[in-house]
Image (cartoon, chains in turn green, cyan, red, yellow):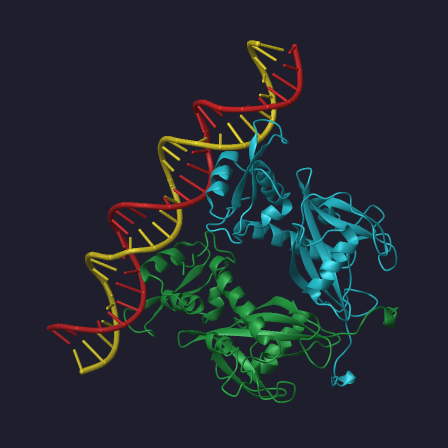
Length: 244
Length: 244
DNA sequence: CTGTTTATCGTCAGGCAGACGACTAAGATC
DNA sequence: GATCTTAGTCGTCTGCCTGACGATAAACAG
């Protein structure tokens, strides 16, 4: 390997940051970790870390995900690249380019703190984004670095992507009911959907849902059919997000 | 600034690569430059270059775009981040992470070669992607590095994005006719569209087109009304791409 | 047994898209 | 100048999908 002339380009640190979303208690929640060291010590941030010398970006994201949550991308969770953030001032220590990834996961057991994070928590995205301000003492209260912006971009990606893809099933356990899937849409979009029209729509879209034959009453009320995610990745026609 | 421990992370080179698309002669074309130095000397590649120490990723992309084409992003062209490619083996010299950007531009004068590129050309994307194979001598004939993949991702992004956004107007001159806009869709999607239904659709979508009052016969036939792009960024309902 | 909750099936009207007919207005050709 | 060719523009009709409901079914709680 004949390296470039080292003076020909500036050296960068490359990290991956994770926007891990799930639906719990009828709300869209994101994983955040408390920073144990400066800068932004004590503030909440997105999980993430350096990309190692021998791994691809998606491998680094999957590794960080496993380290922070124990979650494996194969295990029903969905992982995709979100966007890359490289403002020269985004990290006060040095030039860091962060490749953000988006993870959609079913409701998980309590997260485990890992690495240099003192603790980790699930928080509703509305709370995390609304905290992007100042508290009574005038200190900034939002996420560290530019993570508020990254989270907002990830949430917007998730909101639009469940319109035209079957990704909403990534928020559900392996077997789920139509009502559970509807509550995912309602939590992510923050709207109420008509159960009858929703049922007609998702059961009529070929490849979206595959009935397993079983039923469950875990949501109360009349027993509901159980489904698994079908093979179709794209929904045609898409789900329509109601107007504001 | 207290830097990280340099042994705590591997150093990366960060580049921007550009997928510059335009519509000429009824075909979707991409800008490619011939490499003047190893590796892949003499092969075609996407334009791009190193991100400088003091510039943001989008600034670097805009700078490279101006250097390679003389195009300014304000001047009707559209620039957005596409995706980031960081396979450890993607550049044989060292670890390079490339933040690819997508540019949609109206039909331009002949590109000018710049930097270390011997020459530059517009080529139909079908040709560029079909060359991802081997020639009779067994040499690889496609784009250098992983640029074939990057180009394919950019083309797919453009194809899907003109469905639900007004981005197709970025391929048109400042004033254009409904027929010219239709030919953009036909070239990007590679399909034929019904002129009557297309006209009804685009003129009926509020915010998409603004009539200028003028007419033109530059396409022959009956004079056509001239329009400018309206303010709407998203089309609701979207344009429907015909089935395959 | 009655009320509550959730699931599921039907019905109906409005809107939009695909298919296609009809007409208009310019330049090109004979 | 009559006719042809090329686009552009306006209408019509039909089928599909969606939103807004009503109605029924099947569990559990009191």
